Length: 165
Image (tube, rainbow, N blue to C red; front, side, top):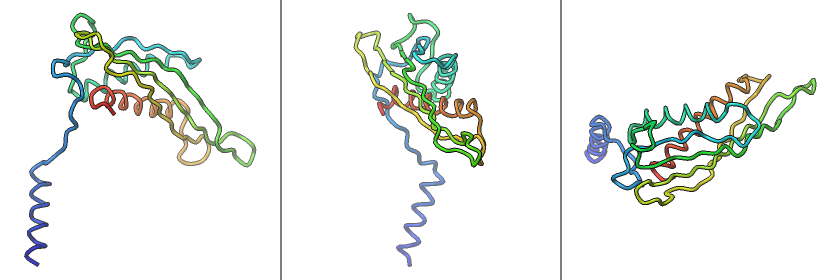
């Protein structure tokens, strides 16, 4: 009984003391400022590169571990992102034969260049995919699904750049 109370007490102390885990950066210590190059779009989906650019910039700013600059000369590294695929595939149909659900997938090729060394720190393709429904609950438009998948991709980009995964 005393053992159980001790374990619970230790657990509660850890929780209430704000014990948290912060992932370590895989970037060199001097790498503190990043320039995000305008994103390239190789798909037929209009303006998606601008939406992803703005969301990625916001995610870096919210994360706070790197400073985002609009001037290459002030940066330690340059992030390049190319949207290589935007794919929407029907996955379900209503009784009337109308498309009810879609599978949406976006692929982004990410490259991060260290300005100091000239080396590529990352060269990776990231993929994000979601399902959304037009008729069945929960109903979501393609634009709403786009916002959700872009948010997911921007988060993945920040994680990949800073944490390496």
